[in-house]
Amino acid sequence: MELLGLRMRGHTRVDLVSTLEEDEDDVSAIDFSNAVLYVGGIQAVSACVCTAVTSIVCCTMLPPSLVSAVRTLVLSSVVGAALLRKPFRLGRVHGLLLVFRALQPVVPIYVGALIVEQLTHACARDLVSPSWRKLVFFASTGLMIVSGFMRARRPLADTDLPFLLTCVALLAVAMLPPPAVLLSGPLCSLPTLYAAAERLTRAVVFSLLYATFVYAAAPPVQSSPEVLICVARASAASVWVLAAHLYLLPLAALQLGVVVFVRVFSSEYEISDESLYSPVPIQTPPSTDDIESTPATLAPIEQLLPDVVPVEVPGHHTNTISSNSIITPTFPMLGARGAVDIGARGSSDVSAADMAAIAARLEAED
Image (cartoon, helix red, strand yellow):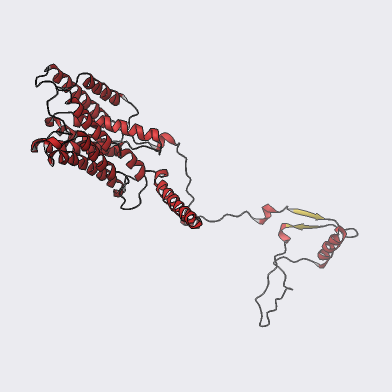
């Protein structure tokens, strides 16, 4: 038991270390200049495409009598969840986990769209349906496309108007669904080659648009509300691909180009340094050339010292020491024995009486 406890504690340490290493990416800013960051987007697109392929294979590899919508749903969900369980790492990059957590819902959103489409065709009673419901469906799809382009024009705008427009369109489709078709549905019907190609195309375009909007408006911090907001806005801007007519899918390329251009080349969301900080004047020191070229001007010693310094010594006459009689000793050069002749006088002569008067005053002060 003790050995088992050591093993468990060892595994706990390893898990803790790995968790701390992963959290280092979350606390750092997202490094959009690193190409490794976009591997998560490729992984999300691949997972969505594999989910679509699994749903197609489950309906084509078995006889129609053995096809089950529940089996197709479970297998497709398992494949998508397995491919997006952890990010595929090619190296360390800041913000990878933060972006990847916003990319993970792409498979649940796609599977949810398959479920809704399957439920739409599950209650079909005849082959004829009112045509005006198709008009409602097309109008709702057009509203979702407008919402997607509004988000593409301003991907970082702090507004939920595009999201609300998409919610209104989806509510209209839910209240007045398109006409149902007997023995149809993406989870149980045998698709033709054209239908399978259309489903794969929608999966690729939808996941690509979703990943682009996630990168364009990535969560600023590692927070569940921020990730949820990013997921909601990205899904609302790209879900129209799963409902629009096949001939309208080329609009996705235009929407993709708009969001990339706005995010990369537009200066609308750039923060100017002048608006945040006031300019501080910086005085550059003079160069050494200017210092060397400027002659040094020193005040003469006569201006620094008093002109007359009275010296009063008891018993002697009053002497004055002027600035002109400052002793400036000059020492000769060192001789052969290193002796210095300190007997040499300066340029001004001082009498013995003056020297004696100065010495007497110093003794009196002591």
